[in-house]
Each structure stands twice: as C-alpha cells, then as structure tokens.
Amino acid sequence: MINGVLHRVRTGVQWRDLPERLGPWKTVHKRHLLWSADGTWERLLQQVQAVADAEGSIDWDVSVDSTVIRAHQHAAGARKAPRPSSQKGRWRRNI
Image (cartoon, rainbow, N blue to C red):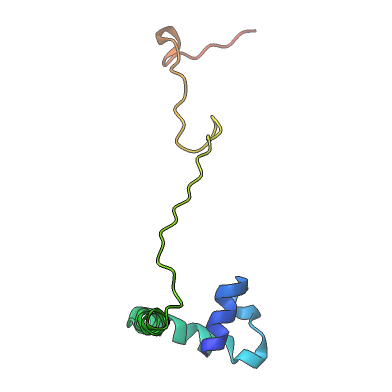
C-alpha cells in the first residue's frame, strides 16, 4: 500500500491508473485518505526525519524561492473600465 501511495505522489498518476502490482487502486486510495486523516503520514515523516537527523543526513539550511508574474488584463477578477454616465441604462437602436 505504501509503495502505491508513493508511486502516485512521485508520478502524479491518477489513482485508477496505478499499476496492478501496487495493489487495487481503490484500496490504496482509501488507505491514503485514512492515513492522511488520522495523522499516520505526519508521524511517519517525523520518525524518518528524526532518524536521518540523528545520522547527520539532513541539511537544515532554509531555501526560499518565489515567482511573480503579471496576470493578463482579462484574467478573472480584473476590473472593467467604467462606462460613461450618459450610456448607463440606455438602449439605442439605429436603423
């Protein structure tokens, strides 16, 4: 089950597309949900980190990276230019 979850996390594959050798996808998915909800993954990470830290295998230097991009003017949430007050609520038909 753990290998199935790790494979999915590493590859990004859909649950239904897990290789059969890793177990039934529904079972792997259900265990992942249960273990996420009850904190099993968090405890496992803490244990692995504690062992690696005791061995001196972890470099605890902090690295921060960010990217800033401009959104296109038509992106969701962009404000529209106000219409002139003379056109508000008017309907005009030219023949």
